[in-house]
Amino acid sequence: MMQIRAYRPQDRSAKAGVFYRAVHEGAAPFYDAAQRAVWAPSPEPDWALPDRQLDQWCWVAEDHSGMTGFMSLDREGYLDMAFVLPEVMGKGVARALYGALLAEARASGLTRLTVRASHLARRFFERQGWQVDSFDPYPVDGQVFDTFLMSLDLGAMPTDAEAGP
Image (cartoon, rainbow, N blue to C red; front, side, top):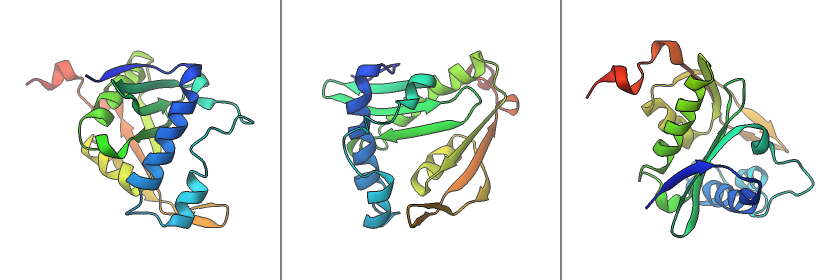
């Protein structure tokens, strides 16, 4: 059974593993090996850098086997990270994490959310009502990633209670 809970400092290694597998396996149809190596160079966290999810609202999904995904939002409404393991893609994990993120955004009074989405994430966010504002090639360490700047106007979106059955 899946559980959604708040991120904790001790989740950092598991988060890095989910991120690595999501990039190297889940995103493989959209990004080549060199791009994936730059995007996620190691399944281990970079302990020299601070864990930025500790300064964000971050949720993790877990089941009997451990962490299966995570999603984070900064205090200004930027959706920073959204990754699930390849074997749970399409099984409701991202949607459950997104529900927690959306509830926090609304409770915090945010009116607009933004994200720089990969090809894979773009498809998920479009299904949630986000719009593509622009295509934005993003250079990192000699690689250029196709990304999409997207936004969601929370004021124009009905809450679950307003949406009805």
